[in-house]
Length: 611
Image 1 (cartoon, rainbow, N blue to C red):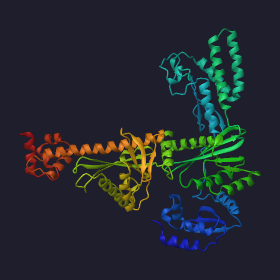
Image 2: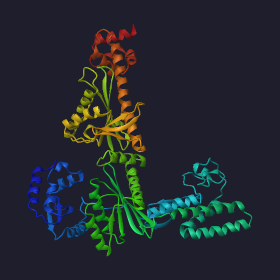
Image 3: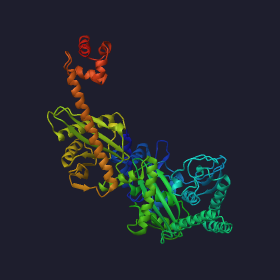
Image 4: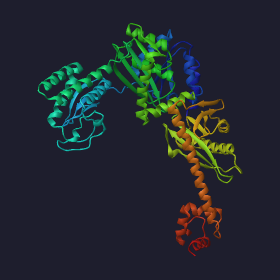
């Protein structure tokens, strides 16, 4: 819990700050610097940390929680404050500032040992008997080279163990002409070694030298009437030339530019930087931050943290969205580079496409970290944009009511996390307060019980299950269901995005609805597929519970025919034995061990099934 006395003390101190530009320095109780920031007006910025603390983003909340005091330095201008901020961050590396540690390191091309070596990309140099080529600083260059050389020379990329003469069925790569398939047993060690040698020449000498050498060998093979060998060499030359042609398709205007994009999940932010020099893509740099927040602020913090330490500053940095202090940061980088550095957000044309390419790479990084596929991540991102949400809705709850008369009204809650069903979080509700069919009343009871549990479990310090609030609620139904649910959210003072899922006459998901009207989703394949699967799942789950309840009621009624067994004892027997068949096969002693069943009732039950 936040120390209210401390917050009051720091707020009073902040209120005495001047309205001048400057840098503020947050410190913990040991005097260690934990955060450094700059402000256009020190008083306004610093006091904001100590007002409405509960509304802060989790990272800011934790920083304020650990802050015990702060210092400040007044500057003549906001630009001077920015320069000083960057210098102090570099000097002190505070815990709550963005400290970038990219995923780059040294990268190697590895040639494994054995009779049929593989060529792979590696991030580390191991003493494993293999041969390592490198190191290289660009992971992109290494992965592209390995991919190209394996395709051109049709080298195997699987984990099979090959032996000359041993025959196996080849995999799909052989049939699509991307592997020579030594597994068939008809390629000798000597033949394989020759192809491998050509592949290594391609890596070390480049494509032009490799093509020249292959052409010489092809002509020699033709002169020696080795036409099959000449044909294989011809195909390799064609493959190299095809790769080269594809690589020529680069952005003709991006002489010296970077393209930067961000992707967010619930607790991670990934950043991808595509670097173009001399009109060619030369590298890709990835970063993963264990934090989320306002992307405009994150972009600014990233630019300051990453580019201020760079010696090869691009002429233009193309971002995927708004950036706080864009002009100030551009001014800072321009002074550092000794020439103009422009920061833009392209809206159309090839530059926008390259920003989108960076965004796909950032999304891929998030997908790997969160075990999501690109299509799932894209669906959540598009759903968030479509519904105008502040971030992709990674944790979605959906509700449905199923009723068959007043005595069998049930509700189902399903949870989708990272676009997949999170079945351990599913909940079932037996509606208790109604005496007749009332879907809206049932929804209100179900949601009231759910969010009452939220308050209880939050006070107990829990973070999962009912204690976790969703990023989005989807009701199975239209405006009426949304309105009933909104009444409950308002009663609990909860601000959670809420929408309904409506079906067409063929019972297929048609649109998302809210009090403001319908939002069509059938044109967006990824969103349509996700929402349809959520609606189908919550309907299936609630119907399944309804059937179980109905079956249980029928079984209970059959047991109530036995003398001395009413509703309570019938439920106790079913809870103990699960099925009527199990009850019929139980011994008298087992029946007596059932809570609430006395000796006489146990004898009546046993006699009923065994007379």
